[in-house]
Length: 159
Picture 1 (spheres, rainbow, N blue to C red):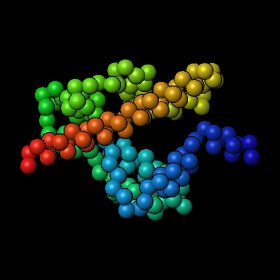
Picture 2 (picture 1 turned 45 degrees about the horizontal axis):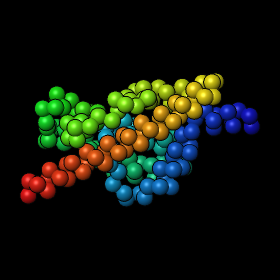
Picture 3 (picture 1 turned 135 degrees about the horizontal axis):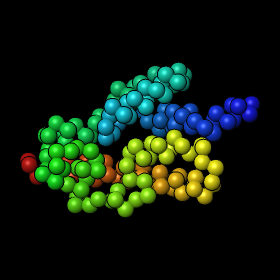
């Protein structure tokens, strides 16, 4: 029992799968930025939790990538400097770079901090990292909304 509880604390993957299946209908269109990463996570969850596999793979199959118009240069601004990450695209579209003001401001840094959370014994440091991760994830979501709104405006203006 103690080992099972320890595993649950270390890997919240089951609760993530629960939320995905509970919150996302099978036929929903899922908009992400960098679908290869997101699809990989969903596939891993589907393999790890066979009872959710069907639903998770339906989610996987309905993922659309907001990065594609920038990656394929269907829409490009010189301020992107040949890059198409959300951290390059957002400031080129909105003249705002909110990531630079954050405690965690890069995807790999966020992943590493998240992965290392269980080993951090200093509770204050652990809470600070959790707070910073929430801020980072919230900003990533808001950035996708902002990028989508900018694209919608460009499309509407071109009609």
